[in-house]
Length: 359
Image 1 (cartoon, rainbow, N blue to C red):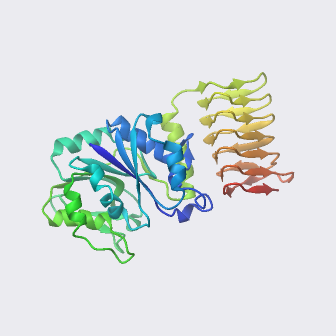
Image 2 (image 1 turned 180 degrees about the vertical axis):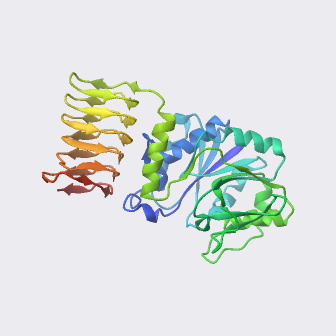
Image 3 (image 1 turned 45 degrees about the vertical axis):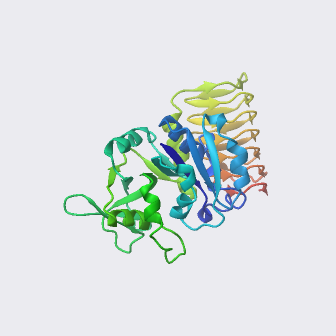
């Protein structure tokens, strides 16, 4: 079995963070979102993966992952020159897939527990396609599963006005090469894209065996700022099971709870870190800093004279001297947030790459 990871999309709801790079490289819990996807595929025994690149920062993706050896995989890059839909992105990988069964995994999706059990189930099922479904409160914003009276999957409807069920198709799909025959028979939708839901519907019309499984545990589509922060909390809760301190904690500093401090990081005196938190390599925390729960700070950052919680700092950020407590914020790489504002309040920021903000 091989894998396809989709790394395109405009990420409009995540601007300004996605003006300069793809949304799938946004870090949560100290790693790019798509790295969790790739590691989940690797842990399912899939060592060869095609990453389909979009037109926002494709070179950054290649720079970040290289040939894949850093994470124990072999990566092939496929370019999708314009956003023509998920099915189009998959179609571009037909030669890469050959005759293999394969997983299509959207690079901005996260799933508790990974996909290993589902992959094993798919192989044993003998199905042509297997969809992972989950229940949501607003199914009309997704591809929605429709069932017949016996519980068989009858249709998949893309963003219907009235949802036929509360169950949606997640961004994780299992297929055989039969899917390519289905894609060849569909036409672009009203938005000019080859829809994966139309391709799945074509499989059903072709009498292919299409089955489904319900997701056990949480699934996260990281399409908004709120989703990114929520994903950061989930990852720190689920995957940071114990403290790991490879950096230096100076006398007078306090580290409490589950905290990951990478090599070369320094926690200076009168600094407090309260987990779950991630502190990247070569980062300096303090003096006089409080880093509260559910905060992920990247590499080569400097956080001083500030309180911050439930937030994400990309690499190479500087946050100093902010009197307000920073919460539910995301600060892009190479950005600086400083100031002498005397107000004692809670501040929320979303700051794009290479920005300078002075309060």
